[in-house]
Structure formats: structure tokens, C-alpha cells
Image (tube, rainbow, N blue to C red):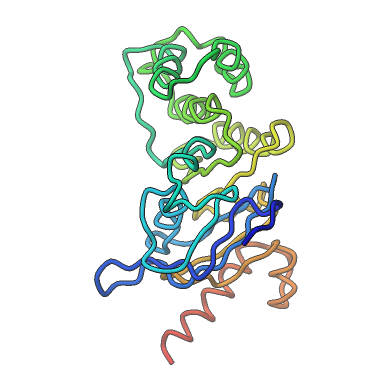
Length: 251
């Protein structure tokens, strides 16, 4: 597990809680500067996997490498290079966007951040609204501010957990445009965890499909469709692999 082009590698990564196996023998490769779609229904093991990769949850067995680091042995180094935007981001509503970012910078002991804050607020489209109280922001604006909080730490890898959930169509389009730009303009690698297939299909270079903690498929939409004998449509591919998994579960 030493390929420098692989930003994330897992080898039989497994997580159990008592008798329940939440993630089972997961083998992943995520390449540098790609948008990697991490797909599956609620309870598939997506968030548990992200927490293990961040060093916030220890695997029951198996191993992982994130940017060449072991999240179990070097969690602080991993956190210093990886950004995480959870499904529900918390802010101080009585502070402005800029004040929220300054507070995050102080907590993370970041220095010389004024320039990067201005650049990041412009990137996410919040520069003109930087002095507004965050309590007056729409959900879409708060999501973009959450992305800004991640970006000011200058990460190499970002985990986005359902970043478009609850957004209106305009907010979704804005967020997806930002996600597409980051690898190209900032050289970032993005792992996008979602159950909204049509949105992932618009931006992901490759996808992994999980169900009940098991990896069902891994590859580009075109590769997976070809293997399944289908047109390159992610929803059709997703349904085919889930039907096969359900049938196996009944045998």
C-alpha cells in the first residue's frame, strides 16, 4: 500500500460493533485529483468508513492509508491534511461568515489566513456576503461556508458527506460546480458520499457502491455499465448490483 498516486488505500478494512459488522473487508483505491463517489443507502457503512479514514474510529481489522499515513497511528497528521464536511455543519449564527472563518483559523492555529480567507470566500461565492450574520444565510450559503471552513486549512483530500442534501436546485447546481472545480483548480482529491445517484453521476470520475457494509462494485460508470451489460446510466447500474446482492442474501 505505497502507491503515491493513490490518495486513499484500504486493505480488508472492517468495523464491527459487537456482533454486527458495519464495514466488511473493504478494499478501495482513490486516486489523486479525482472525484470519487461513495454510494449506498443509509446504513451501508459509508460514514463509518469515512470516520475510520479520518482516524476518528479504529478498525476492528484490516488497514488503511490516507495520503500515505496510517489513520490509527497518525490521526493528527491525517486530520491536518484532510478536510471533512459532515452532513450537518454547525456555525455561530450571531457571527459573520468572516468571523466564523477567523474563529476556525484560531482553533486550528492557522497563521497568515487573511489572504486565503478572502480567496476562499470568493471561490465559494460568499465574498459579498462576508459581513452578514450567518444566522441570516440560506442552507445553500451555509453549505458553501462549510466548504470554505474546510478549504482554509489547505487540505489535500476532502470528504463531503451528503453536501447537497436539502438544497434547492440552484443551490445544488452551485455546489456541484464548486466540487467539479476543486480538483482542476486546487489539485484536490474529493470523496463524495451520497445516496443521490443522479447528482453523483454528474461529477464523479469513479464510484464505489456499498450495501450492508460490503463493496458491490468499484470503477467508472462506463466500466460498471459495461460489466453489467447496461447503458452507462448510474441508476441502472446501481439497481443491477443491488438486485444481485439481494438475491445472494436470500441464498
